[in-house]
Image (cartoon, rainbow, N blue to C red; front, side):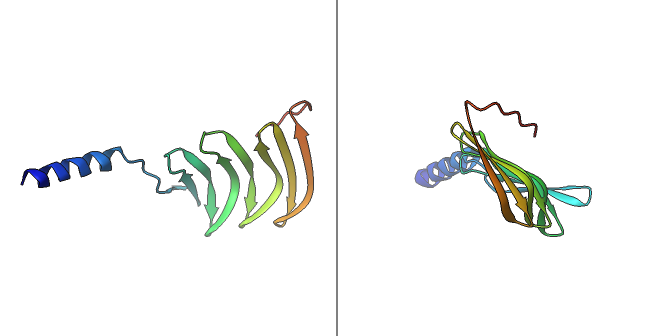
Length: 116
């Protein structure tokens, strides 16, 4: 009996302290805001879904919480300017209808201002 109580107590503590990594979906107007998480509980990506497809602004983060990508979807397809960060490099990628049209790479020494 003592073993069963100890087992239940341990399971309760583990269950309470475990990070909830299930996605969260919230209705916002006629769209759904989606938030996905890394295994450590930090946000992996967030954005919107419209009619079952990715739509609007999306932002992605690495496991340390640093922004690694931002851009827009239109009816499930990447569109417009997307920005990807990796170490000291920023890549600006232009998409049209989910296809890469142009890529510009910026290094830390380059003067760049990105308002997103």
